Length: 394
Image (cartoon, rainbow, N blue to C red):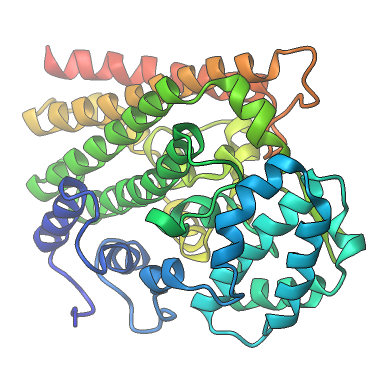
């Protein structure tokens, strides 16, 4: 049982251990939620119960483990009849009153089946309208959208033989799923570390230790994307996987499918370097499809100036070794994000440049030039930050 408020040094030690151990300790994901919810100070007494993520991954509330083992072959055959049978049978097993963990798992599994049905050419909202009240109830129970998201597809996907996939057991889809698992851990951890740094003072010893954790988490996130880029061919994604990520209609409203644009970069970007109009539009949409804990944390962080802006203002005053270190750590994190975004733009352009492709935008609704505008804004912020770092270190 953790106390309501943790000393900063204890929190920083926990964040560092989670990062170094790749969240392998039992309950690590739930503990990370507690720290994020408490702004790096533990879990406030009034906060809702933390989700048991391990229970979500273990859950099979719709009884579909066997069907998911067969789903790649059924999808390869485009067997709409089998998919429709599974969808209708699973709907009869659904319970709108399920607790949060089962509701999350049900959204994950139902969403993947409905997406598969849509890819086979059958509109699930027409062929299986019985899903609408179930999806709506589970969305209300979990405070999320009424379908599967990138978080369901990656972070809450079982590991091992029960992993849910649209395609076969080849390395490419598996690498994408794992990258989402990793990103949904590293980015909230980086956001918590930023919270701790503000709580302590970014140039205090504890604040600098927290910034070092933040920097390492962001660098690890960028490295994960670089790794996936070496495994996943953009044309494989656009031709094989992208058709499963089309919108589905629930209660008359279209809801986007899992999208890389919806990973929780909003827990880092504005707090770290500020953002711009292009990023604000992208993050506003991503927040709709994110976890409620992430939305609450982002709202809390929005009250502060960007760390880079605060440090640059400090640099115009007295130069101290601590300020120089804080600028160096922040600059390193911003440049890691820039490397990621530059690679993302290149990959997106390759994926969506094929004139024969049916797709011209990502599953989140954005086009490569939207990503490029964010890169331009961040590069401008990075230039000013780097100049301040150079002056402080002179």
